[in-house]
Amino acid sequence: MQGFIGDDANILFDGTAIVSNSDKMTVNRIGYNAHGDFNPQFNLMYAFSADEMQPVYYRVIAGNVRDVTALSLTLEESGMKNGVIVADKGFASEANFKDIESAKIQYVIPLKRNSSEIDYTTFKSGSKSTFDGHFMFKGRPIWFVQNGNIYSYLDPDLKADEERGYLCAAERGTDGYTVEKFHEKQHEFGSITLKSNTGKTAKETFLLYKQRREIEQSFDFLKNLLDQDKSYMQSEKSLESWAFINHIALLLCYKVYNLLKSKELISQYSIADFLSQLKYIKSPTA
Image 1 (spheres, rainbow, N blue to C red):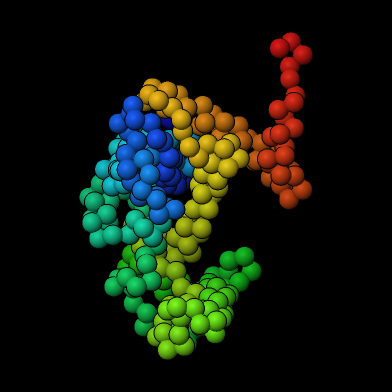
Image 2: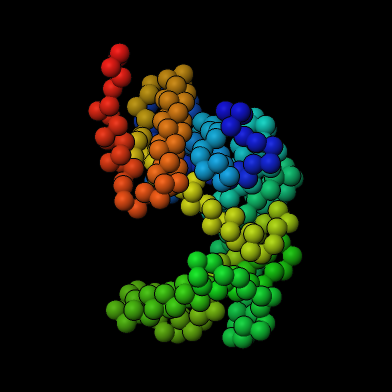
């Protein structure tokens, strides 16, 4: 797998939980996942190359392990020099940031909107002149302000959508949604705040974070396209084989996906339908 990783590759890291109810392995442990479940599971730590648009490395980790040590070991084992962790808000804790900095790992991690590290003074002013500047993203302006390694962004389109959604919920009488609370938190709507030690510009940091959807898509391919959201393996050797075969299958999926994308056919053909058709093509010598 190290052969897929270039010295200057832009690598994104993330993990996903896979349910496993086997009582013959020690790697599957009770752990929290994105669905709020505490089922026996193991974690797949994945590295995705934003340059090559494909997964390049994976590692099977115990289901109750979600600390920086696992990330640090993954970076060391893979031999990556320029890995960047692009994680979700759930990873944004003071202890995690301290451990990441100590391990000298680069990261881009969003902060929760109620984080004490965020200074909303600029957002409360209501004047765009108080921002450090703006850049265009998909045809719309993104305003930003940088305070050291904290990058705060305002997306006016997102702000309008979130305000509309909140007020509609308040009109319906949804529990916890009131006009008074709307006024209290109106400055947070449309905001995204990232913490990063990469030293990149505000725009580069924002675009790097937006690439997170690529590695999320690889998990979608794994769990939905390949139907591997669970494992029924009964030994850790079998589990490692299962993970390796799935990794090869993911690489092949991305070869098809990138080919369709390069020919501008991705909007016309579903990759799932395409792979279904490939199942019926066999070598005449087979």
